Length: 135
Figure 1 (cartoon, one colour):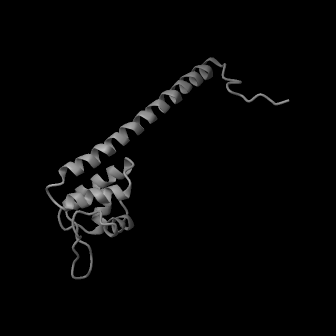
Figure 2 (spheres, helix red, strand yellow):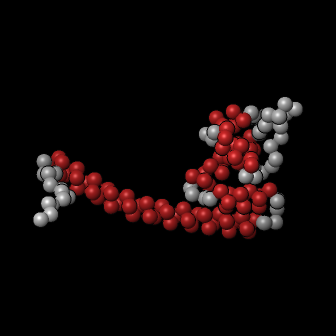
Figure 3 (cartoon, one colour):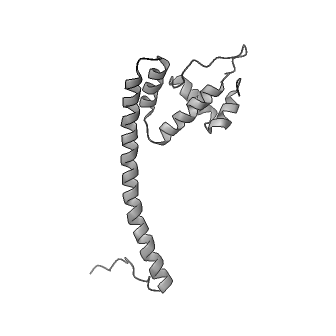
């Protein structure tokens, strides 16, 4: 899977070509992306794996600045693992909190779905939460 074009990487990661260029400008890769003599970027499988992780971090709400910080730490090599762990632990807590919020919302929504389903099936749904005319 080495020697990948920008199009190959876009297909493998689901990121658009513009997003890949953005990641490069923002220094989110673990290495400078080499180019052919003609100026075309040459990616490898490690770049794809890194981008898939970055996608997950971004999809889970990690800000670009934090992804950049994480990339900087990884790029700088051994010795900062505690910093990386702290960054990831903080993000993990943030994601867990968001999941808890979404779970609470889902429980309320589900109870309404159950209520409406029962009333629709029983033919008693008319008037559920209908606004009353003001006088």
